[in-house]
Length: 317
Image (cartoon, rainbow, N blue to C red; front, side, top):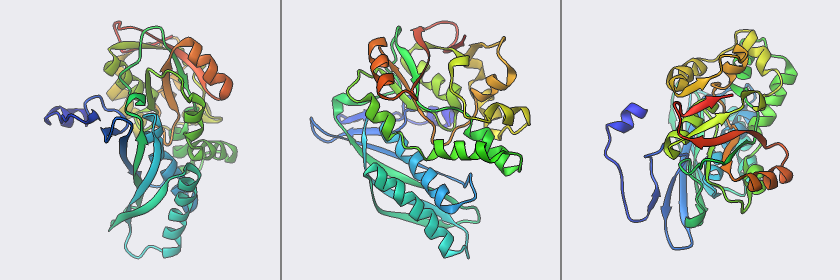
């Protein structure tokens, strides 16, 4: 997609605050001096067997991009690809599970669009609201900032292990709990803190999204790999060979931007590239602000710092 976007003209407008130029999580458009719209869309194929759980994960994943911009979700439109002849009860369960998460977020489902497709896909286009001067971007990380991450890594490898029938129930339960946890709670914990940079960690993995933040901010992210939180069973899944195709793609995409890591266990290094579904927020903010956020929500883990731009956008320690 980077290659595609490079071929397209940049979009500009007096009220466009964030477009696609830095691969940010959502677009932001100013309506007034006090209000701006946040717009995003995301959908994907099932990663769990239970329809309602799949719907809940799809909703949490789609909503996350609005919180990653500092905004509050308001409305959602479903985007659905349903196989012809699919059981209506199954489809209703997916939507019902999603609606429960939307309600938890205070976001209203106002409609949607569906098409017939042999492969089931589901997600949402979400519209939110943010003050124009309180937009969190992936392009503002500053040298000296602390890096916080709100969720553990490993949903990609655990999901792959589940599909292969080699995942333990406790690993799957932990991954589902993480994927259905709304980033609303992380957003609230951040509150009025002075956020310099923010993104949510999803399909490109921690290294891929970290690369985007580093390049957009013209800085280097120093990541203390052994401080990165991992979901229970994630390392075991890598050892069992349950690496999703997206992990390999992420290494090919972002590996050249990453320096260091030679002394790390291969399994841990692999997880830094693991594609996440409904992953956590990666936040860059001053030391004093980081301490306050961690007191409010201890699940935020300090995983590194921002430095002046060095040889690589990301340096593993």
